[in-house]
Image 1 (cartoon, rainbow, N blue to C red):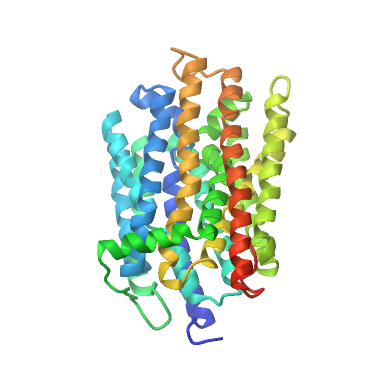
Image 2 (cartoon, rainbow, N blue to C red):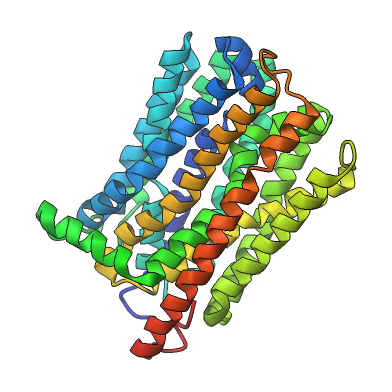
Length: 429
């Protein structure tokens, strides 16, 4: 192994700390998914107002991606990631103590800020500590293991809310961040032999020029649209609307809904490493693999939404398993951006790609809230089965836009790759 990459044990220790930070970010991001109905009652809000919690958090997350990428390129992932842990913890503590809707909204804004400062750092750490052939596997494995945070948010958080109450449950969640931050101070390094890696200071004009150059590459745009199209269905279920959809839209119990959401995350954990292995082995078929997963997701939602009455539990199980594969599939977008940009632009290019899925998710989260309020006016949180069918059908608009753009930029990216005569290790998208 080149001395550019770390030795086995040290690399795994560094990666484990970074994964722990990402795990907590996903947990805090997803912790409202099982508390949606409680939040509606606690703050006396409508479906659209409830959706605003997650929407505002995602707006902040998406909007912070390019600035965070610039910060990582300049100051290194360690400093940015540890700062994010502290921000998330303070924000969750504020959310625990909030007794009004505006204060709770402000807290979720800063949850989004802290959340935005983790995943790009994790990608940069993976690129620094592992060999190029292992990066696709480690990237998808990182995204998969980080999703364990959704499981903790789905079942244990449900238990905590029911037994400890709102305030204590969220204060316990907030306490984990400082622990990881302290461990990171001692164990997390930006690169082998270097606690910190600092980039060259750039003027604002140079920064903007670098971002524009990354965006002009069709590989970056292809990665953006792949990340836009693959994960929003699982994100929307995991972040906010999963439990209400299964309980009110499909007439399942809270326990069944929690198991379905957990199964979705477990599926992502199983599929992630398999996809990572496939990407590393057949890199020139990356976008084709993503298109198959998108097609399967569209097919399963169509069957569920057209089913007369509530869908059978077995069908819902198949749905969440297929939808769960969308999260790992979004990692393909990052791998395409990685092979399309030089190393000094990796974090900012990843930030551009990472915006895609969260822009789609926030649009859908808010649109579902509006649709539910329109179809069940004045009903509070008593949404109907029909209203959920209408609301979940909004996904087809985003799938249509994303698929058109994927096909468009796949052709352009392959044309650029063909002209540049890239090696099979990098491959076609």
